[in-house]
Length: 585
Image (tube, rainbow, N blue to C red; front, side, top):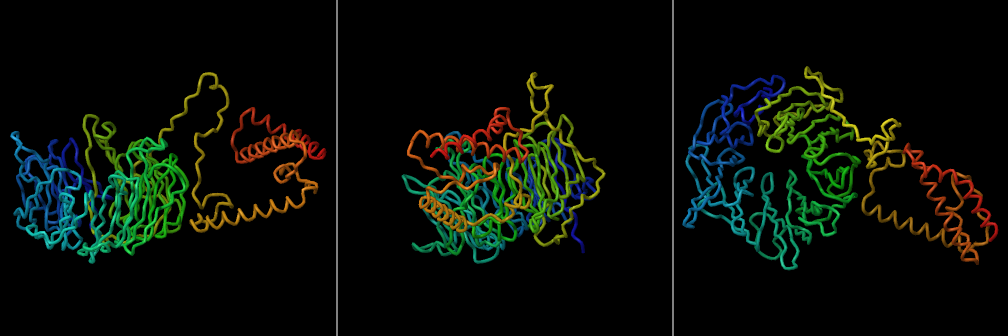
C-alpha cells in the first residue's frame, strides 16, 4: 500500500486548519478548521499519527488516522507541546509564575500519559530554553537538566531518578539518536581562565576520571550548538562568542569542532574567514555541509576526517538543507538575503535548479523527499504573508497568499517515519505546473545623473567563486587536505631555495631573453655595485609586475579604469628602460 500524502498544517489570524499535500492542495477533512486567533501552539507526533494543539482554553489531542478526539486538558496558558518518540507521553509547558508574596509557583511542566490522559509527573521548569525532556528513540531513557545536573529516568518512571550526571555548571546536553548504547554530549562553559569543554559519555558510565568517551576544550565560547549525526558516532560543535575581539565581525566569532565517540577530535579548518551560518549532517552520517565566511559565503562538504570533499564556491547563502534521503542539498539565502536557492544532486555534484523564494522566513523538506515548502510568516515579516509548495526542479506547484489584513504565523508538514517514502531517481527536467513561475524583480543599481547616458560597466562589489566542478582547468582538482597543503608548501619552499642557490652561483650570466607577455623582470636577479641603479631596477620590476596583473584581469573580462589602461600602454617603454639599466651593469 502506497503511503498517504503528507498534510500541511497552517496557523494564522484566519485560524488553524490542514491542507492536503501534493497534488491536490484542498482543505483536509481530517481536522475541522478552528477559526479565530486564539491558537498559540500545535505539534504532531514523530510518526504523524497524533496531533495536539492549544486554543487558549484547552490542549486537545486527536488521532489523524481515526479523526477522533482522544483527550482534552485544561491548560489555557500552554505555549509549548511535544510528544515522546513512541507517542506514550505528551509534554506541556506554561510560563512559570510566582505569587505576589514571593512564594514559589506551582509546577508548570506537565507530562501526560497519552493512553489514559492522566498526569504522570509535574516539574518546575523556569526557562523556555531546553524546557522539554529528551527521550531516547525507544523511550527507555529520558533526561532533564536540573541545577547543573542531568537527571535520567528509565521506562517513563518519573518518580525515581535512575542516574545522575554531575559536572560543575552543566549548561546544556544533547542525548544521542538511535538505539542502545545511549550516549550524551554535555557542555560546561569556562570560568576564571579555565576553558569551556564538551564531553561525550556512554550511559550509565559517568563515574571516574576516564569515564568520558571524548573531550574537547576551547577558550572562545560563550555558547555552543551540539549536533549528533544520525548513527551517533560523532558530534559537531559550533562554538560562538558574543563579541569578536579582533573587530572583524559585529556578530561575534564562531569556530567549528568535530568530536567522535572513539576519542578523536579536531578543529574543522574553514578556508574563508567570517561567521558560520549553518552546519548540517547528511542522513548517511558520513559527511556534513558548512555554510561560512563573509558574504558572499562559501559552502563546503566535509568528510569524517574533516577534509573538504566538494566546494560549492561562493554565493548569497546562509542556510543548508539536506533532503530526507540525503541525496539532494539545498543551499539558500533567507532572512536579509533575497531568497535565492541552489538545488544540488550531491551524489554527482550537479546543479538541478536555481529557484528564488523572495522574502521567505521558513523552509522545510516534505517527508517524501520531492517537495519543498517555503513561507513568509509574521512576526518576522508582516506583509506579503503566504506559503509556496515547490518541486525540487524549481516548479511552483501551489501558492497561497493570505489577505492583506491577515497574517500567517506558522506552517509545517505532517512528519513521517524514515523509510515510509522510498528514495526516487533524481530528475533534472522541471516538472509541469499550472502555477505561473515568478520572475524575481531585479533592482537596478543607483546611477548618478552624470553617468546615466553612458554605457554600464560590469563592475562587481565581490568576485564570486564558481563551484569546484565549474572552475577552469587549473581548479578541477579536489581541494587539498591539510596534510597535502602542508607538503605542497614544503615542496614549493625547497624549489624556491634551489632556484635562489642556482642564481647565486652564476650572477654574471646575462638574463635569458623572454617574450613581452612574460617580462624578464620576473626571473632576472641582477645585482650592481650602485645602490641607486639597484633601486631603479627594483621599482621597474614592481611596475611591470603590476602591469602583468592588470593584463590578467583584463583577460578574464574585468573592466579596467582609464589610469590602469595607461599603465599597460607604458609596458614597452618600461621594458626598454629595464634592459638599458641591466646592460649597463
